[in-house]
Image (cartoon, rainbow, N blue to C red; front, side):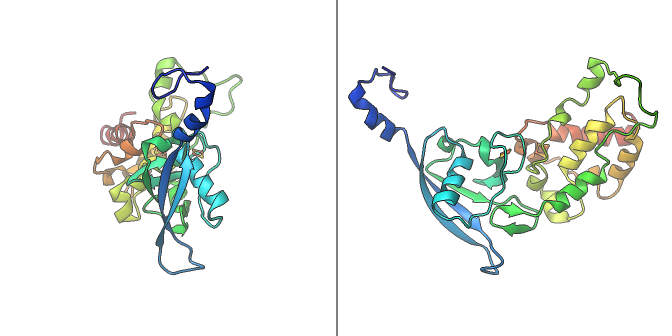
Length: 256
Ligand code: SF4
Ligand code: FES
């Protein structure tokens, strides 16, 4: 017989039905909607779902989409915090819906699309400006020495220099929490700098000068005002602001 997860009391078989009922929570989702085929302006809808406390907010959105309103638009794929496709504004903070527990937001959660990118429909934004910034910093290994006979080896210490920034999943939570990115339209944004950092400090790469030149331009790192929103928003725990500061120093002191 299993103990009650809340009280620790050992349960009798006859208790199990009531425990199953008590182990659910009611969650009201207030969702910002937009569909240019239906209305010119966005509007708000509310849905109430019954969920288990340890369900993810993404499960609650699925419950709405699959059982209440099939027109709700959202992106998701892995449901495990890896693909980066379900970043959204949850109670005013950027997060991945698949990483937020229902018990941490119940009884009510307000859901909006991430900011600073054009909304296509409901929670789906046009990611192209974000990926244009990403592409602009040459986010790939550049090495003109030709193919090596064996792998390009690297010491653990050299690998450690950019370990943190290898964890990026391109979810855009950092970039779309940045007030400079919202207001500017030109700033490449934190995620692009994180992905430049990943190669600038890689001892096997030879493209650092090109990337630093790109990031020293007016769309680059010096637009950053060190608000730390990006670091707070990153679901991978990357020290985004620190990475940006390291790239700034690499430009200023020509050292990387
Ligand atoms: S740095 Fe973090 S928040 Fe920004 S895109 Fe990468 S994983 Fe997402
Ligand atoms: S669905 Fe893949 S990160 Fe959330």
